[in-house]
View 1 (cartoon, rainbow, N blue to C red):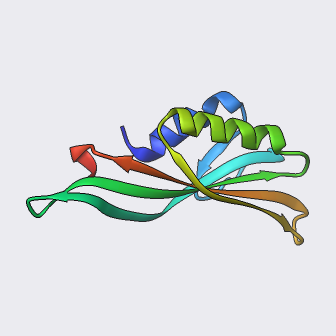
View 2: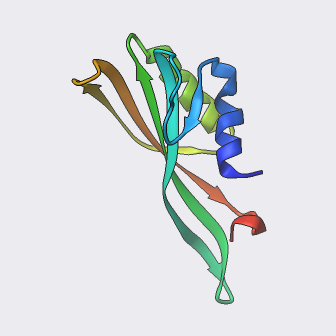
Length: 113
């Protein structure tokens, strides 16, 4: 399973749109995500054995997004993601609240090496 599909499927139970990179729909609360770094973290015999994927999850909302953020953290943790950082933003031009969550996911799958 691709990492993008894993993220989308994991966050689907929240019940709001989830999109890779950009969302073009009309919902006022949604999630976008992207991978901002990929690197080998475990090597053996000159071969990469484990890859670390650094992922940014962005929660966007015109209103209160606290419950959505809690669900994102819980669901991703259950799938083996580890949270690195989080911070709040407000987009002045669109008047949208924006929560940035960064996670990493270590993958030992041969398909990703």
